[in-house]
Amino acid sequence: MVATFADITTRKKAEETLRQALAQEKELGELKSRFVTLASHEFRTPLAAILATTETLTNYWDRLDKPKIDDRLGRIRAQVAHMTSIMEDVLELARMQAGRVKYEPARGDLDALPGHPDRVRRSGRPGSAADSRMRSTPCCRSSTRACCGR
Image (cartoon, rainbow, N blue to C red; front, top):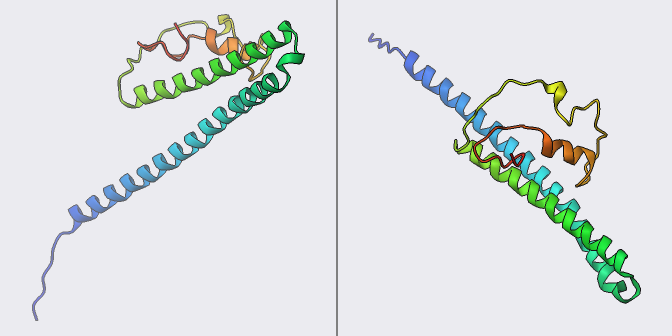
């Protein structure tokens, strides 16, 4: 009778490392999928508003007075600005993932921020208090300042 023994500890460790890497990749894929779903929803809403407003202008241009036309054009501009902001956020995220954003944390008094939740009404509309809060909050201190414009 002949018996052979081999130490497979290294192999088992490598298999476990591969399993963990696969689990992380699956989780990353799920996160990316959820992000794409969220981003597409965030784009559909302003696009629907733009479409509805342009259809109103097209169908009723001759019946609308100048202030009403200007109001509707302003709505379109606001929705385009909102979409631009969303796209800038997506691009900033891509820069962060690529390691092109320098992280520079800074100490500060969060209660003193102009957009402190105790003083701001929540709303998702461009130009709203919440939108102003998001624009005024020094949120990233990144070298590109794309998220807050500072």
